[in-house]
Image (tube, rainbow, N blue to C red; front, side, top):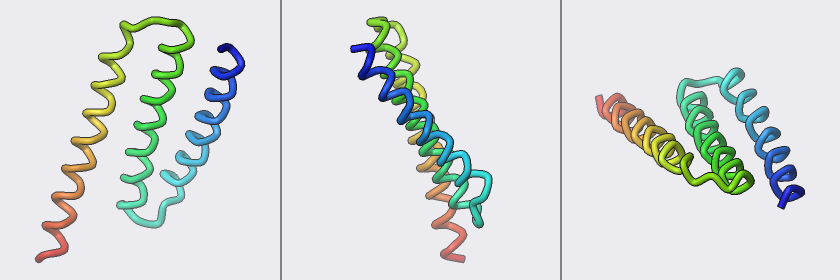
Length: 87
């Protein structure tokens, strides 16, 4: 289990670095918003890996809250983006 957690942590760290580059270098605001949403999903995945590794289930509400905030943020941005394109 330790090897799997280490491999998952390394891959999630690499994904976070690549996503952070996209957030910083994104040519448009929409690219940055998608990057932030992806970073939140990576963070939730990292918390899930930690919960599985430490066998601690008290972190599950934090994972759910992070996923909910990420979804609501994406939905709000999409709604306002569609409104701007219609005008």
